[in-house]
Length: 153
Image 1 (cartoon, rainbow, N blue to C red):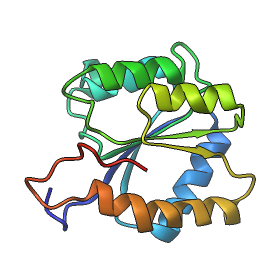
Image 2 (image 1 turned 90 degrees about the vertical axis):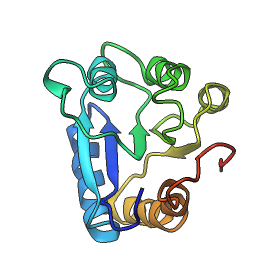
Image 3 (image 1 turned 30 degrees about the vertical axis):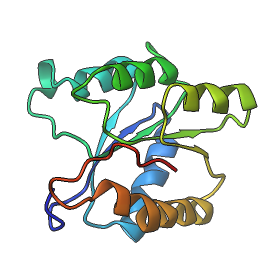
């Protein structure tokens, strides 16, 4: 992917407040990023597989995934992504309010690339988005021909 190509991010989250906070956080740290939003697990899979109304959906370079979703849990979405050869290389950053070790362990067992606890406020989210910009963009925006294989946090 050329470095001047806008970064495509898919946010999978049903909480309107969390979506607004991510939008605001991205404006400050990654203004050129393009954000698509899926409000439940089924919609996320349809978006990623470009089904139905999502036939022209952009292929995301990064997925921000909540675990607690209607219709299909974030764990199920993560498992579907990592089992699909066409999607498996897309980095998935789990963003959850859960600090439970069992949830964190399960996310990594399903090959999440990163697990972050949702922040309480916009300042903390902006710091999280800065981490995203500083670290993940060097992983996600690789020079053409390089793969994401083997690159994990």
